[in-house]
Image 1 (cartoon, one colour):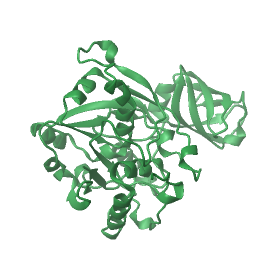
Image 2 (cartoon, one colour; image 1 turned 180 degrees about the horizontal axis):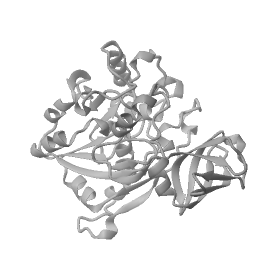
Image 3 (spheres, helix red, strand yellow; image 1 turned 120 degrees about the vertical axis):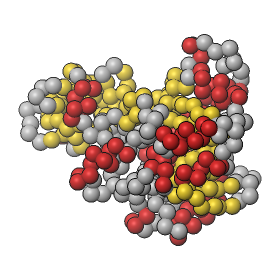
Image 4 (cartoon, one colour; image 1 turned 60 degrees about the horizontal axis):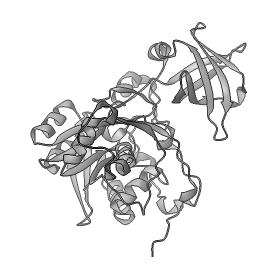
Length: 352
């Protein structure tokens, strides 16, 4: 009989030394752990060896979201103290869901001035979850491009002296569609040259867009994981991707964001609502709060590439749902003992 796991089942301890504070010298020179679910085996490779793990007819699905320099700093109107604002998700028009520090300085109706009155933000609502809805006036995008910073994970230390190089690496080489406040980090290991080698082997490459945000990194506080609520994240899947999925022998999702996007549209694919006679209106645009944890039955994804994730995170739960918790935790133990680097800039895992 299936027993619903608890959040504490996904806890593990780790030494601070395993946290990757910077990327590998070359993107595709990270280490790669290969988990075979059917055999229960664990193998060790270098990421550029991943091409040998693919076969003609496979389809690699990448998330082409692009991280915005969404950390901006302003001042409360009439005040002098800095207010840090992270634009986490566009709600509609010029209104964004934001993380604000210090958030207690602001109330509904408070105004934040950015630059020399270049942009003005007005607090429309303070949410129970701690975020604030802020409506902006002025050239927000231009101000971000000129003055904003890429929102790097808070556990990456000593960034200031190498910020530009680190921010450049916190973006996939195929990033295209602006809108994310965090990188889909499983894709950071790919280089243009490696992608060309993969294509040359007869492997298809296609893209989805899911603007990675708060949903991906929100901690799970409830011990009963069914009580955890994901934030909605916006996604888009084009007709060329839908057709490629239908033709693929094996669908390999790069990152948990690609997995969640594909599994979100699985119902539409399985019911035949999306035909093979594609027109522009076949593009699927929507929002997903899909939370995948053990017990979930995967419908599209046959294999996945991912990084090593934090304890008790929705990401670790998704990976455990795909590979089985026992195999995943055995792999994590072996990774720590073998000197693998963890989290956003860390090493990779291929699960087949």
